[in-house]
Amino acid sequence: MTDDARDVQAALAARSDPAAPPPSPSARQAGHQAFARIYDRHAPVVRAVCARLSPVASDADDALQETFIRAYRLLHEVRDPDGVRSWLYAIARNVCAERRRARARRGVHEHAAGEERVMLNGTASVSASPRGDAPSYPVEQAEALDRLTIALDELPDEERLAIHLYYLENDPVAAAGSALGLSRSGFYKLLARAKAHLGTLMGVVNP
Image (tube, rainbow, N blue to C red):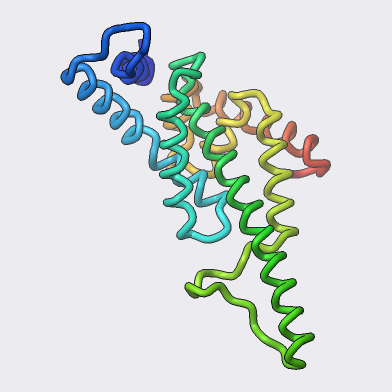
């Protein structure tokens, strides 16, 4: 049994089940510690996924936090405890896609409001958020990233993970050996197949 599988079991054992006696304080503490280990084990790469798919750098930390909040709430839905990493990636991609769409919608509304101000005042104005945040994410870029997210989701788990490892890990070969049990040559063969598959899904020749 892997560390992830053991920690998932321990975290689930600490949950309150209406049909069972409540867990003891020590069991709850052990469950929280188990989920903390899952976080420590995977947060760096999940944050890298969030940073890659987020409109601005400051969004990555919020997306990371939301990812693990959802993961804790949905932990009972894990079907393969040994595949927690891929499961967390999927949650992170969904969180980032939702945040991109929300930012894009906000950008459309802000642009429309700016045009209305120009019509009413007869002068041009620069649309900015009241807190001075980064500009709203362009709709076209948000849509392109959504298409990429959808295409990635259609890849088999190992191909999708190979692409994430290649672009997000400092040492993707070592990470692939740990996560997938692959040699260097095996990893690069899988990566080439994943890139070709992704290119087909995206409608391009060389992804």
